Image (cartoon, rainbow, N blue to C red; front, side, top):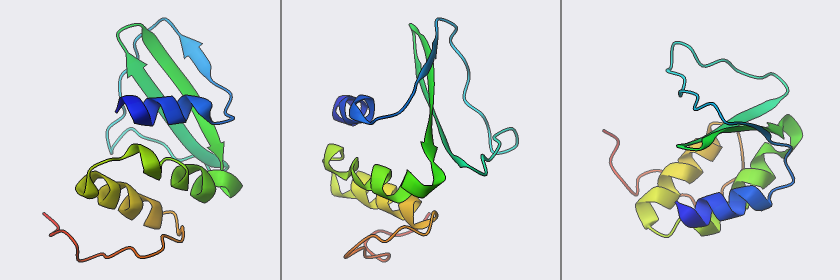
Length: 99
């Protein structure tokens, strides 16, 4: 996770930071941004929110692949990218069973 966060902070995103510790949305309360993907990072020190422009989602998420060191975590993340119609070379949808 530390590697992932390091790469995430290197992205050219504008972050809105707050000392308030926010909560994560549920599938019932999360909202979709028609113009991009919202990112929320929570810590004991507060909350940071950023936005990936819709036209940059695929390339931005692909740049984070190298932070995921275990094959299953990478597979899950790449599967998430597929939901955004991103091209994921050599992705094997059957590599792990769905549960």
